Image 1 (cartoon, rainbow, N blue to C red):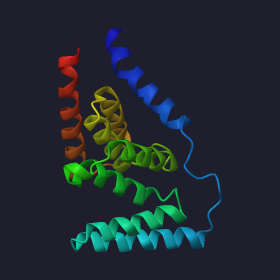
Image 2: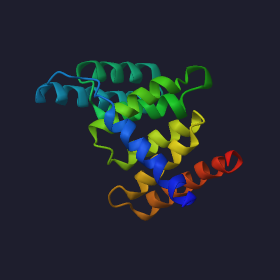
Image 3: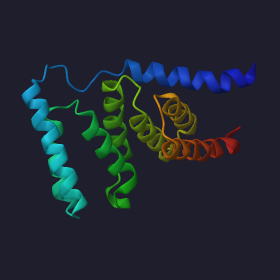
Amino acid sequence: MKKYYNVYIPIFLFVFLVAGCNSSSQKVVSQETKDRSIALYKEGLVIQKKGRTKAGLAKYDQAIRIDPDNWACLNHYAWYLAVEAPKEDQDLKRALRMVVVSNKVQNQKNRDVLDTLAEIYHRMGRHKEAVAAQKMALMSGTVGNSKKGYLEQQLKKFEEKLKPDQ
């Protein structure tokens, strides 16, 4: 019975907490505005890949400012802040806020967003939540073999951190 609680209670709490979070935006955003936000996000991706990180992040900020629910931009920005940014620029709290909104917009079903959420929880030392999010990522939709292998590897990494705590 103890195994049941160790697996399902964290998953339940994770879903309950995330589902209870409100989206960052209560206003209705027009399709034209959403399209502009997506275009700014894509510009930011191109600029960032060319090595101009600050200029790319500025485009992400613009995209999020006009559409606070641009889930792809929020997810990418959160991953950058948690994983790719130089140590002095990492901001796990901001990254978590961003990815929680992204996850809410995607109805907790996007494996890439759930993977980002799990990684951020892991880096914050919230390993049970990381495991729960990663398990949800593995259960979300069809996963190709290479992506499945990556997600399973991540899950194993997060589960390893649980062992000393138990």
